Image (cartoon, rainbow, N blue to C red; front, side, top):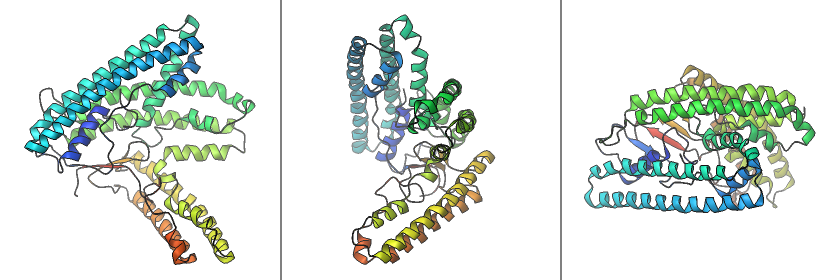
Length: 418
C-alpha cells in the first residue's frame, strides 16, 4: 500500500529509496542516468494503511455495534504492531546501507535498497489484506452489504490525492460536506452524490491499475540489476498515467457542473471557489501577501491613516488577485490540454519538473509573472504605510503555507542544471 503522504505514481517504497539516495549522495552516482534533486524531503518512513481515525469512520459506514467496534480495535492494534515491526526492520536495514556508504563511498551498496523496500511493500500489503479480511469476518450479512461503500471510501481517501493532472485529486464529496448544509439542502444532492462516488471509483480503479503497471517502467527496474532512471521511459510512463488520470478529472468536472445548480443559490459561489482551490492548489492557496495584510491590519499601534490605507490596499489586492489567479489557472488548463504545461502536479500543491521549473507554455509563465508582480507591488505598498518597527513585526516569507508565488512549493526536478 502506498503511503498517503507520497503522491507521485511511484510506490512509496521506491520514492523512499530515491529520497535516501539523493540525500546521502549528491550528486547521484555515475550509473544513474539523470541527476535528481529533491527540494523538500519527503522522508523515508512508512505509514500504516489503516489508522484509528479511519477505523472509526469505517465503523460508522458499516454500522458496527459497540462490541464489534471493540473487536475491530483489537484487530487494528495487532495489525499496527506487526506493521511497525516490519517498518522498523526496513528502516534499520536502510540505515545500515547508508552507514556502509558513508564508510566505503561505494555506490554499489545501494543496489540492495530496492529488494529491501519491495519486500517491505509486499509485507505491508499482506498485513493490510489480513486486517481487512478479519474485519469483514466480524460483519453480519446486512453489514457486509455495505462493504463496497467502505472499499470506495478507502480508495478515494487513500489514492485520489496522487493525481498528476490538475483537477484529478478533487474530492467533491469532501467539498460538499465542508459546506455544512442543512439536511433539506442536501436532499437534491443525495442521488447525484451516490452516482458520483460510483463513477469516480470506477475511474480511480483504472487509473491506479495503470499507475501500478507503469511504475517499473518509470524507474527502469530489472530484476537483479540496480535501480536506474531512464528519463524517456519515465516521461512515457507518466504520459500514460496522466491519460488515465484525465478520466478521473473529467468525472470531477462533470459532477461539479451537476452539483452547482442543485445547491442553494447563496452557497454556489463558495462551492465554486472550493472546487477551484482543490483543482489548482498552487494558484489559489493563501498567499504570503494575504498573511502580511492580515497581520498588519491587526497591529494595535496603527493610526487612522494607516488603517484606512491598509484597508484600501487589501480591497485592491483581493480584486486584482482573483483576476490574476483565474488567468493563471486558465493558462494551466490550456497548457495541460496542449501537453505543454511543463510541470506535473503531484498533489498538495507540489510539482515535478523535467529539467527546469519553468513551463514550456508562454501564457503560463506570463500569468505566473503577473502574480509575482502583483504580490511584489502589494508588499511594497504595505511596507510604505508602516514604520520600521512595524515592518519588523510582519510575517516572514516561508513561515506559512504559501503557494508558488509566495514560496513553500514542494518541487522535484528530474534532470536539468543545478
